[in-house]
Length: 291
Image 1: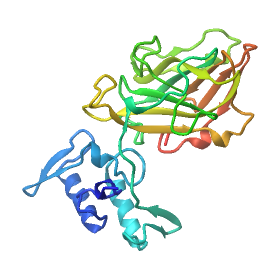
Image 2: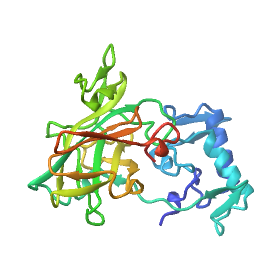
Image 3: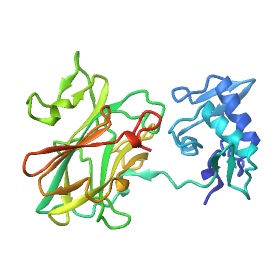
């Protein structure tokens, strides 16, 4: 794999070391940020572009002073190109290779149609979170993987041609409840202003019963989009639900799942019109349930 795909190798010199720390410090000192990616500092140009964002060391989807600290801790723990995983002050630090950017048009949906399906909605994905979802925007995508999906394939994804569309920014003068029925648990879902939501997405099922494995937000990189075939690269922010256990999110035909990011819960409306909720607090880190 190309050395440009090595985590922390921000100066692209084929290795990760103290020179990358200096590169980041100079970029930050010159005013570098996720909205100001190319800067001048002491007569030299420093750039953190889409490719370098993939080299993020601490996995929060941002390049900032926290990556400087991560690299310093890795180096202090004895990190090198021959010693990529180290311990420092009781914490593990790893610098390894990352995969290529994923492309939206390369995802292979296992079933395009089925007599069995369920529906999923996502609400309250926030703006400004210092995490892997910090760069979410309108027209980013949603990907779903069921537990029985074939390796390398997906169960469903956003389709701009369908009513579900892609992620959309919610703008309103006041927050809105998803349900006004006093007996409906969906009443606890309050859609917040200035957040992103995804309307109901149909997910084909191989049989009348499945488990939901992964909910993925696909965030297109700058200059990329779902409708530009040669430029549709992005990164994936994933909520992996395997640790919930087999009985916690078992879905039958025509049932509905709703993720409320603000409430840190998944709601499941079953075929008897009963709604159960699953707490996601244990997944919540850096302001999100996604990683």
